[in-house]
Length: 300
Length: 300
Image (tube, rainbow over the protein chains, first blue to last red):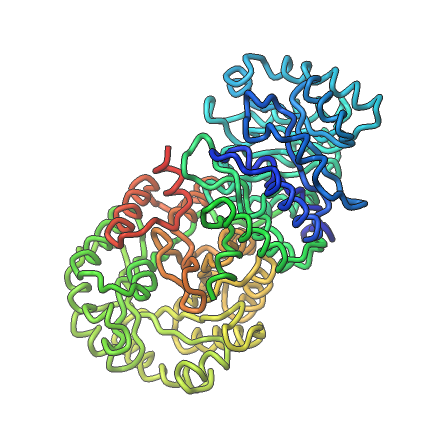
């Protein structure tokens, strides 16, 4: 009937994608403790930070300090976002062995944000990807706005396929398909994933849903049926949506882990420890958790 | 691949299941306005109130006033909850033509709440169901705790099937299967629905999910794949969970309607008007909406 994976690898993006939207700068020590706690929870991939220019994202100016400060566990990957060769240099200086690059699938989004076409934006990553290949650095690729764009609305699936295929061909071992503004619904997510999987092997694909419209777990359910086995999420559901102030950001890792556990799909995650970590993070940020599992468990 | 229904009938339960957990008594005029607004949104079934003893649920002591005060539209059903013959008498006095009865699928829940076994609790409804049949009154049946119980934990699917089958045999035209504490996950929900559908036709089944653990839409997605075409939900996600204080209650009708619209499944609902109604209700109750769609739309 369905082809659910036996196990799923969760890519925890809270420390980077989650925190980068925080207005108040979070101390490096807190970020390091967060990542160390996430390691202890059993996460296998924890995005640590971004070597973006501190001028663009002051929140992540401490990238080198955070990356060197975390206690890395064997077998756990700690990728960092790298926007260009300068970021690559900074990342390599502190011994980074896995990076992530990104492009939007929406022409309008690329135009608006980096004043380049999709093809031009991907070309800009070519030198980074070539150096990573030569250095034996693994590269993950993010494709954003895969189910909708704040500027152009609908995003043709063919554009998503083209960007994913290009990044994969340029050497990304995994392509994460992101519904940046959280507008997607299950069957649109499924159709998009299916189309991409015709160009890039399903084993090299991940899905990345935001819960802005509450659809993330339903979308994930549809995509799991298609066989995707890598899922991005952020503990405590951190990461607001810059295009809908006050709205929810990334789907909460706790809620994803709860669903997968209930479906008998292994993740290697200690859910109790994860809920505790999310509540600890919420306390650090001075706000309520966005994880419904954490809310339910902490309100008995 | 799947057998999604072409259209879904949403049973709006906010005015009853949602409001009955409110600590502060909501004025009858507000309840009437809520139901009238929901009618204008295009809902086809709107549970209006409950003729439970005012001693048990003071919030619903105005059942007769509310039922007589609403502006009923032709073709829209306004069922009311009836716990016993006395409630049935009160409902009939004001001209009610559709009622709902209920039983838990959990033995422990029945024992704890009404000091009766499942079979005894169903027997108590027999006189109500017989009178309804004689009076030409339609009866909807609720089965609660179908995916978990706050007292006994796991609930055997065979108990759910037995209760649903009995209520159907006793004359209920539709059986709503409720995950009262919101602990279910998609494949457990699917397996439960499938098992019940072997005893009661799928066309006579509805699903009723609480979003306590954030799983409601994912569960719904799995059940829609099985062909269920009636879904209970509450505008603004009203209705806390008495077993997890502060946690979310019913899945929000706005979020269900958004998902179904995105899947191309017709509901007849005007989503813009529904979001407005939910925000109006939240303002009346003095709290934030639990609908993520409403949050996203009102935060631009």
